[in-house]
Image (cartoon, rainbow, N blue to C red; front, side, top):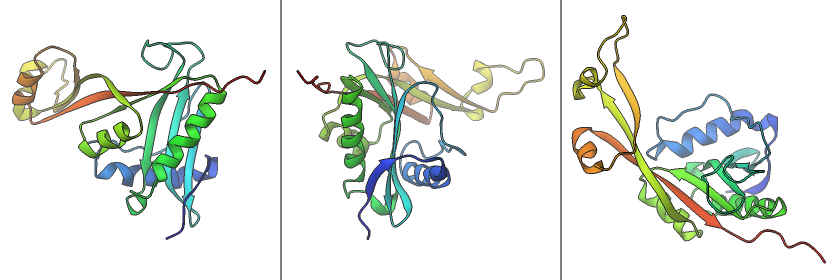
Length: 203
């Protein structure tokens, strides 16, 4: 199998990017988070792909802050939010994501960033990857999917002809165990942070 090389994203990569993201997320708790086109960012960003055999086999997008708290949580120092990171299933466990992260960090240091943030769900292998690359868990809440037979219309009755049939919600309360008992599909949504030193300025 061809070795993957990391390079900046190009507009011509979009179809491969979308396909790679969908397949890389398929085996995770984000299996139904499907996009039909690549995200665009209003501000500065680092957008990388890993390519092997002419195909996109990995991807990483980081949106960069110019003011603390503008993109990431209000924590010390300028940050970059990792909105998308993934590796095609046929190329996983070959260091593709690590190579993308290393290049993204190198570029972020040049922009005076001191940390990355990344939100993810409760996949043990994903948590293990982040932790093995120096990320620490710093915050969390719940993603809750409510189905019709789970009392959805008790929570949100029919109003003005609008009939709720499914709900996706964030739970930020204190009784997470009760929410997990009540609804079948509940995910911990957790924030990881990796701190690093900015590029030193030549004297």
